[in-house]
Image (cartoon, one colour):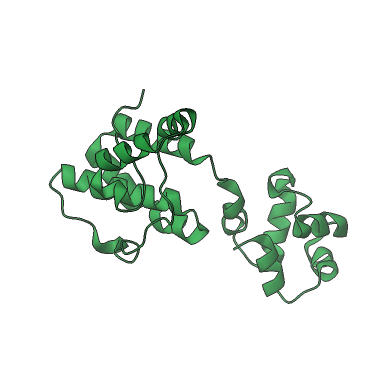
Length: 189
């Protein structure tokens, strides 16, 4: 939940909350309006606000700590993590981290489906049964396909969909299912 939602749910005016929390009204007003980023507010201010709202500091700042990275950077990071951890530890991390429902809840569908595809792919590769915790997501897919950046660039440069069709044919089935045309996840440099 965002800070604005916590404040709205408290049924207090910004002025009253600023007095109760001992936070300058303009600071709270700018934070509420999004003029001031949570990352730029003092720890003391966040602590006072969390106390006044009766919300743990972690819950208050969590939506702002994890900013969304470019999807291609995200994919690269995941592939590097796979290379460093190995298949089984990667499976364990995905399952214990709770990243799939967290990404889906935030509306970060490419990231959520990418992690779900990675989990299903690694389970298949290692003879491990699919985790059924995420069946609610398995009946959906991205509206439009996402291709590797080099395929996108080559298609634009050559003005042809030939490279996209080839990527679709070669895509790992677990990724293709969600419209992610991932051809290789183990070549992280």
